[in-house]
Amino acid sequence: MTQTAEYSKPLPRPTLISKPFWDGLRQEKLLVQRCRNCGRLQHYPRPHCIVCLSQDLEWAEMSGRGTVYSFTVVRRPAHPAFAADVPYVLAVIELEEGPHMSGNVVGTPVEEVRIGLPVTAVFDHVTPEVTLLKWRPAG
Amino acid sequence: MTLPSLRGRAAVAGIGELKPTRYAEGRTVPHLMLEAARLAMLDARMRPADIDGLLVAPAIMGAPVTFASMMAEYLGLQPHYLDIVDTGGASAASQFIRAAAAVTTGLCQAVLCVTADALDPSTFYTRGATMMGLPAAEFERPYGPMGANSGYALIAQRHMYEFGTTSEQLAKVAVDQRTNACANPMAIFYGQPITIDDVLNSPLVVDPLHLLEIVMPCTGGAAFIVTTPERARESGHPVVALLGAGEACTHASITYRTPMTTSPIVESAGRAFEMAGVVPANIDLVSVYDCYTITVVITLEDAGFCEKGRGGPFVAEHDLTYRGDLPLNTHGGQLSFGQPGLAGGASHITEAVRQLRGEAGERQVPNCELAFVNGNGGILSEQASLVLGRIA
Image (cartoon, rainbow over all chains, first blue to last red; front, side, top):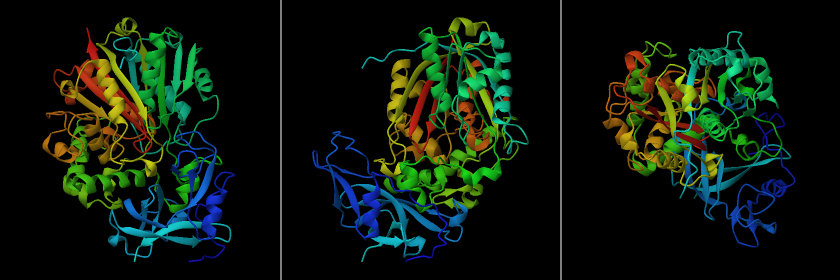
């Protein structure tokens, strides 16, 4: 799913805190912060655990499996760069480990997407520097 | 729980509101704010020298640092209390609460609360903050969210899944509010009634939301002046007081909110009703934020007008027009009156004041004494709930 250098959609700008997450995606690993003090998983990444305030966080690799918690079909481009993609699915994915994430469901007609649909992570290398996390129906 | 009570301590001296138009046609945000503020001061029988507090809110495109003092100077005010209030669409209701607190504690006597926006289509796609490190920019925007539209679509889809809510039920909200707008010459969609079929046949924009379930950004402004009940009486209008207030915020992005279909209105409205000492069954007018049809349904559930999950059948069973058994957004709501940026949320306050004063004309709700107002910001994120009432 690698695309050319002409990629014109908004790209993330990784920070000091989030860089390991984006580095992980580039290596096709889905990493989420886990607090070594209270054990809680936390997405998106932050400088400390927002429940117990511990700064002792590690990066835990997720299974890459989840379900569609909710979704919408975007039928008008939100940004001119998405014009060629409509209609596309924007979803909230519930990882089997618990955290929720925003993403696109790809590789299936938009009509086939349902709440509860099991999905698997897709690592979309949109530029040499950035890999976006997307999802396709499992199995 | 004992709440610090603002009950009956502050009231509305005057309101001002511009007729919404689609585009700015050369007018600027400061210009629109002045027009709205002038109307509010005239309505209150006040001059700028009588105003000693100012609360502004940003435009959708943002506002500069020190915007409040810039606007104070532009308005000719020298306030003892000033600030910019940003709780998104809830900003006007939040201004009311802050103004009431300032008046009650004696920081100042009369607070002008003003909101406005000037829609410029050339900047439509350049919206959105660019500050480094904002989570939405990093973890959501790359996937093509359609601003608030897709956020509320996710909520509506999940509400349908959990509770069986239908598009027909959601459409009823838009239709009844349009009926109300057709009794309000100030409304942007005045004279354009719609049916449930019109809503369902309008294009799907973000499933399951159709075009006519989605608010249309426009241009306009609104202002209101909060003061003591004694000074409000000098305006010559029946006095509309703040009886209850509550705010709550549980999230910014809907991605991380569970359950997605329950809003912090549970807490904000709960606090407002407790402070006022009334319950939803006592309310004569419901004047609540309506950026989308689903927003109204969830607000009615979470504020306690019906059981959780029953909002769909509830709006279908009740007549939400000014002639109905549950008058709701009698000005047309933002969906049919218009949403001039954060002044859209002020329209629920100005309409409640008109109705409680008995000045709503053709759409006047008989014996209207108590109103519930809700301001909603973000994606059902920040909530500011008010109970307003006419006092002797």
